[in-house]
Image (cartoon, rainbow, N blue to C red; front, side):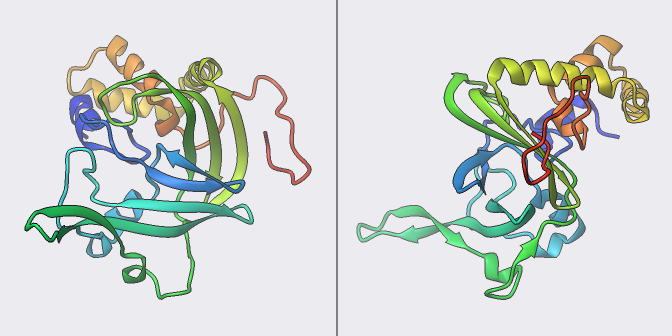
Length: 231
């Protein structure tokens, strides 16, 4: 089990969203609009299929995973729309510029769709004004958020929140998480490395969206739209 410090510094997928440098986000198209995505669904895929991980010519501290994926929610399913890497191209004056190159066809045949059916978790879509900048992973705060609950690649829930409501959601989510066996397991493992209960709770509270795979704060009834998706 990694120490919390290692998790904070190294993990970008649903386990944690905190790299030491603010990260270039993936993208997602939802309801016809494109958003930044503060979750990286492809990482769990590349952990199981390391030979398929795209390798660019460059890798910066702002893009440790080495690629930017674009997803789309289509017919309530999460699919991969594109995946790009940065490559260096020589300019006429002998200098080099970084450009983006699509490598989607190296993962799936042209014209086919890769459904992200291995992913279960909560996608975080920030948008609007930057309220507070944090030079770490996806730690910055934005004025608004869309949260999408995904189960085996299928959209099962949605929340639209401003940043204050998002903070309240995370607190409620954390309090519900504390009642689960998963919380007890994480605490027991992290205590082996000498982390205090106070520090562990502070960390899990902050990153609870990445440690939980569904909306747990069901204290109030959750309305549904006509399609049956929870709002």
